[in-house]
Image (tube, rainbow, N blue to C red; front, side, top):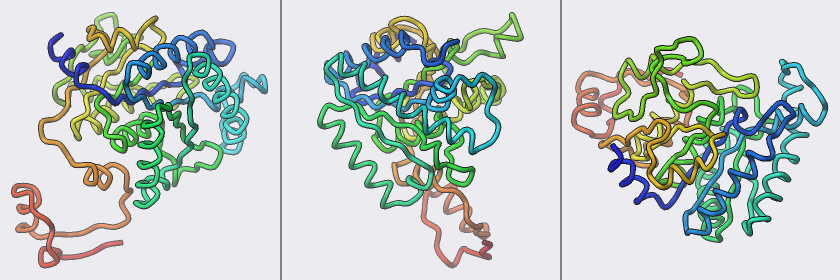
Length: 313
């Protein structure tokens, strides 16, 4: 398996890194030591010629800490207000840390509607391509201040998977608070074992991914596995790894066996089909006949009007 990892790392030139709130925060709000450590590693990757894009959480937690709020925020207006306060501080911390290492950053805040609109989607892709060509590291977060259920990604794992598709990443690294995907929840079972490599999304893999989340985050292991499933469908390998571990990115990029590696599928979706399948939300339903079903599923053909029986929505 080391050879597989090494081959993946050797081919990776464009890397999407997602860092969750549980990694970025400690008892006193943002964990500046962790952020400085991760930033140093990302800056070193950029200096070696890698294109790096960062999807980060942490705005709401940062805002709560600034206001000295200790209890969980329940209402949407409270979370949005905390995000408005915290996002600026979060970016200031990142910007200062990256500039100390000679790297400039760019902030991009998105809602789902930005990606479901094809023209805006393409504009975002072009902007990201330009920023990477300039050697700048784009820092992306959901625009929590304006996002409501209808235009939310759900969590930043889902957002990161979409961004990985947009930039056509060679590798998606999802940094979390635990070592990777376990056979069962390690917090409740001593028999739990770390799964090193996932080559297919079997029932056992789906069952191993729990929905439990930390107090600071919105996505549990289930959302991380779902994100891995989405990116591997278009040929992007994914590694879920412990974000608080020292030199974690360096270890990953030297091919060390760490975390859980999700191997890419052999049958890849192209970028536009991925956009249709995983970014757009259903607005209606087409009822098709058996011939159209066979053409789509078995022959890889397009849907013709003659195969449509009914339209709903």
